[in-house]
Structure formats: structure tokens, C-alpha cells
Image (spheres, one colour):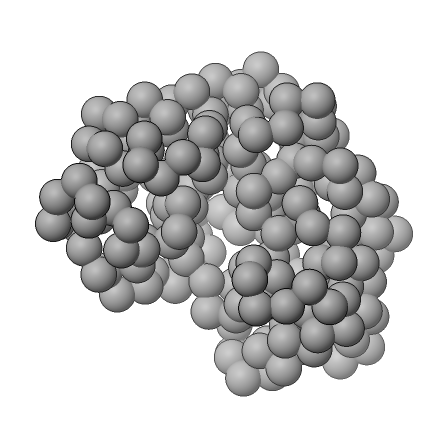
Length: 199
């Protein structure tokens, strides 16, 4: 989530060493690293819309504002990959409450609208803790390793904009490969783990 950024290249190198594919929910926050979207795509990873601006008040101002931001990110993805994607994740997840600043029911409308437009949105059922709970690499790894052992299928939320989180990936991959886990990029048929909507 939230990349590409200064640590995305390092992450891609680790994934390549383990021959593991991931899904990148991308933004336009770090234009200097936009070419990492193209590299990830060319190496077989899935690319998905997260948000162009990551400005919650702007994105969730209205349905039109959401899709203006969404389509701007699709254009960035197309420039880098030659393809539009059908995969996405809502900023804050579909269960976010920040969208209520606009009006109650906005997320219910948007989740239907993206699916009606042919997209699949993804939430998560394992959280690495790297977006506010911890900045410790060992703890990020432990959160993921513990979390995936509690699920039959796991969709992990982790951010490539934090060095401490990217540094945890090899530990996670070592554990997974030694214990019979498969790491797969998302596609339209993947479990989406939609959260309960709070707005």
C-alpha cells in the first residue's frame, strides 16, 4: 500500500530473490518513483489503484471527487504499464469512517459503484501494524507471521513506504516458504475480504 516510494526498489529485489509475486496498491504521492510501477508490473506483480492524492477530505468529498482521483491514478498506471487495472483498495479501507464528513452512506454508494463499473476492491484480514501500531521491523514481521497462521487464506496489509516494514519482508518470506505457504498476486478471482461498512 501507498507506494511507490524510496524503498519499493528494495522490496522488488527481495520479492525477486524469493520468486514471490505481490500486489501493489499504488498512489501518485512520490512521482520520482513512478517507474517502479512499471518495474513491478513487468516482473509479474499485480498493480491496483489505491489513490492519486491520498487526501481523504478531497477523495471522499463526493462520488465524482472519488472517481476523479481514481481515474487520475488509472492514467498513471496506464502510462507505466500500458494497461488499466480492475483492482483497487479504498483509502482507509471500505470500513473507513472518514468518508462520513461528506455524507452518511457514501461508502455504501462507492463500494457498489466500483463493482458496478467492473472493478474489485480489496480490504484485508491480516494487518502488519506498520501504519501506526509499530515502527519496529521485528514486530511487523511477527504481526504478519502470527496473523497468517490464524487464517486459512490471508490478505496482508503492509506498506512499502516504510523502511522498517520493507525490512520485515524477508523474514516473512523465509517463514512462509519454510512452512508451506504460497504467496500470490491478487486478481479478479481472489478473495477480497470486504470489511463491514461503517458509512
